[in-house]
Length: 183
Image (cartoon, rainbow, N blue to C red; front, side):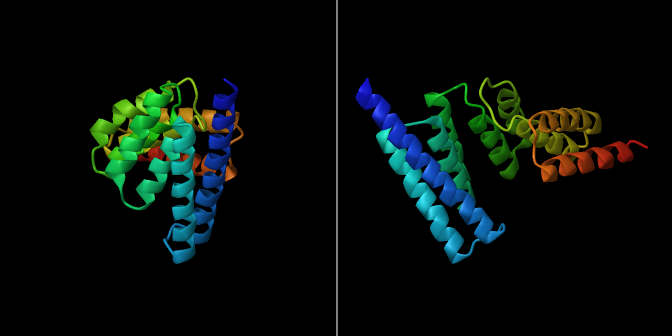
């Protein structure tokens, strides 16, 4: 039991280090892929992989999938999220991510089930993400009332969670636009 605890702690350390590289890649790239950002993302993938080798966690699989998505490897990202769900079906992030990847692939109808599952997952942070994704999906399909309902819940959750000001402003803007379209 002690060895498993030590392994899990080391795996979590590696995952956190990978996540730090991942976030630095975003900060450096500003949404674009330059060489320094690509190096940071590559380091993140390597650390996520090492973490999984030591002690597989849903977080490491999910975030390795997220990194794969940035390489354009959407199908691989989805498979990583499915592995995450096998490890911990209560962790909501991989459900949301699969939904987001399916939307990106042009399969919004297939995404709905995954996003709904994310909404009800016992362990999920930030909780408002699947509501935002469903809101965008429904808005794109012209289902304005459903989109408004999803964005209203996203806003409520983001405010309750102490979400960042940019996310709250974005959700509020989406709601204003959707409500205005009803007039």
